[in-house]
Length: 149
Image (cartoon, rainbow, N blue to C red):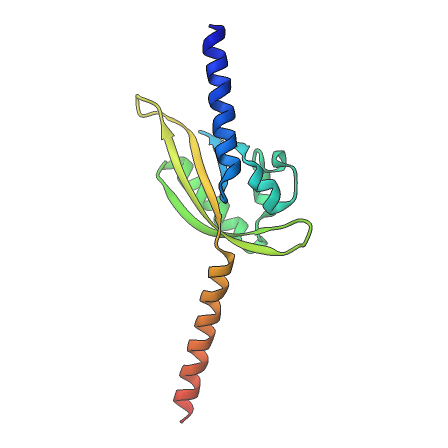
């Protein structure tokens, strides 16, 4: 049994080291949606202790315009567990600045098909989102200029 526990501890340390090495925020929730794990990348992005994201605390760091959508998406997913992805803005507490993140979530089922929890990633897409917005503005300005002649 001692060997088995050490094996699990080793596996957990290995997972944590991988999760902390990648550029995405990695997180895990219980079947009821309660967040129980976030990797160190979360603390770097939001500049708060990782534990601040646990439970429903992660909602406190979303842009106020995104909170209702995020809550609604989660409630719907909890009723009908399916993978989903959404884009939300998350606030860096130190700078006060919001950055766009692509959030992807995957339900985890046991061998009997019962929901065990959720795993997910949040990828910083702020730069590409800002480029996209700038391009739309330029395209709109171009249309106005062309229409004026």
